[in-house]
Image 1 (cartoon, one colour):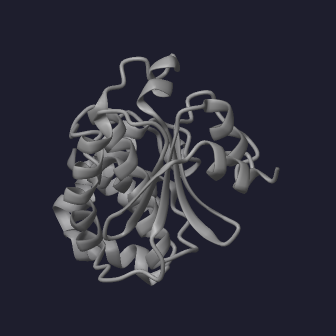
Image 2 (image 1 turned 45 degrees about the horizontal axis):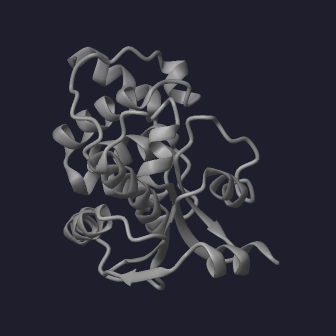
Length: 219
């Protein structure tokens, strides 16, 4: 069978729609109720941050209980898949998807072995932030700010100290998410939401060196 019909036909048996997300998942895991409630409570916060009132079509969230199927789907978009990869926001066959591993599959991965329901909830919102950024500017390419916003707004990192990335590491997206989050939090706190969203909407090249130097002077 073709991948799409095979995956949906055999693996996905539940479909729930919230305001901006169409949730498709398999099984009847008890945590799904909490997960859906969490998504409902947080999706509006994220869209409000970005000033999104409506979208053309809901993003499809697929929760995978088989990592091989997850990797098969993700490999259609990403040529290189890191062993720690557990969630992505991407376009496939003209539709927007968020694909994440289920809690059970996360726990089997050594990079996510301590994952719990809160971990999965924040992972989904992290990927939803990427979707929102793509919604307001599909060509936005500043990785550190993209990942920084996803990490901050999802609540995955609340650190404000401990930044240890060089400028080159930031420019080349060769550092950890904690560093992306810390410098992004600095910009939000200093300049406000409108400024940050404006950087994305306007599509102007972000002067990372200027932001980095200012951040280092004030930290």
